[in-house]
Image 1: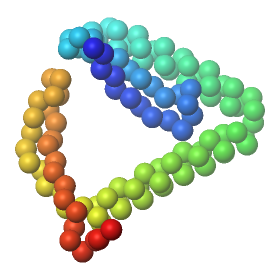
Image 2 (image 1 turned 60 degrees about the vertical axis):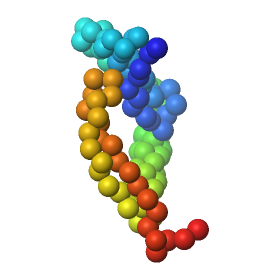
Image 3 (image 1 turned 45 degrees about the horizontal axis):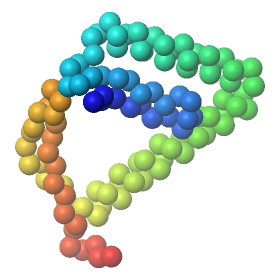
Image 4 (image 1 turned 30 degrees about the vertical axis):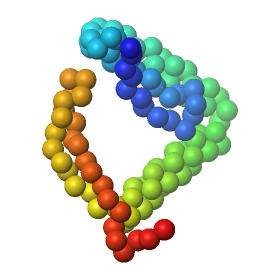
Length: 111
């Protein structure tokens, strides 16, 4: 079984899936650095292509990123309005401390 840390991007080719564990064992720091370096090269190559396409491509990318961030903020704001969140405690999940959160619909909001 493999576990990945995923860094999203609006550009499909730039979504970074970083392997962090294999069969329940963490990937060595050396391998993580190797993955990061490979991704950095890919991102730099993409940026270079973008510069060749000119400022229009860069501004379109920035506009897309801004729109994605706005949608994410709106979604989070809506969730905070619709649900009551309560932290139940902490649990260890694949050697990472995580928060256990329960959420229930707020009574003032009905579907």
